[in-house]
Image (cartoon, rainbow, N blue to C red):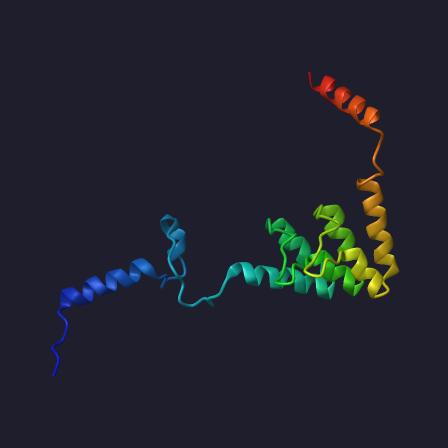
Length: 164
């Protein structure tokens, strides 16, 4: 039969395992170690992040979205169809979520998905006229009709003068 490994070989192997994996609850706190935790699920964190974000938008969970925003999550993440939380919230008719994403998170109001649809088109398609109104008001407020070039130039010069 095969021989048993020496105690030294076992010790070296054990040290290698301990240096790679987190076996104690406070292991990662010590010296900011980047160890793998065998107790945690694997998988791509970005994928989970997108799923959580879009599910919160789908269910109208503003408090979850607020937590995500406060934890510096990218609120404009896209899924495999290039749909954003704003697309999902608009399609589901969650006016409060749409308002939160636009006003608090300052997300792009006109992202285009894989089929070239915007959140406003989704809201129109599913008959959510209150959401359409919110999106139109936001776009009118933050994307006013193009001002004359002379006026823009004067405003820019005045703003620059104020900085001097």
